[in-house]
Image 1: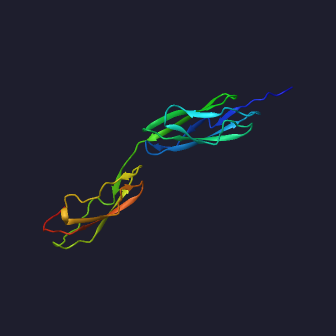
Image 2: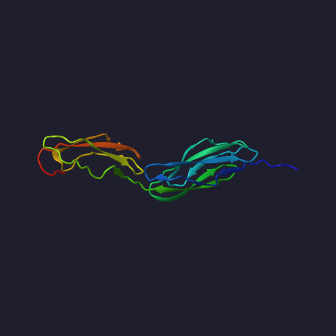
Length: 193
């Protein structure tokens, strides 16, 4: 009685689900373990994904051969180009142990560039002409899921009657905040906005 020598290709998991990723902005990675369950060295080991660029092989510890009983890993990257469900396959090829596929799935999330202000209006009350009010501060927070590009923070229509100072830069990261300080220094009498 004898036993044949074979290389046996196995992958885990057989299907890989990725965490959410923002379309054209962020990515998510997943790990596939490749094992030679046979009793001889596996040869010609290689990997690729479907033609979609949304799923790609990011890195791997596998080489072209895998000794009997050994394992290696493949890291797959999911970078959606639009919102909604996405699917694909990771292909594992060998020259002496057949081929296998791992199903890939993930959901692309739409970009949401939004901000909120700590107050919707500022009332400075009565201030004498050529005098100055106390400063009032508005906090601006990025409540979206992508960084905000900020070109300017300005007072509209107020002319020289309002001055402002800002800690806001060109980019406001997700969940980050900056502040704008405004002071009312009227040059003429009357209601000014």
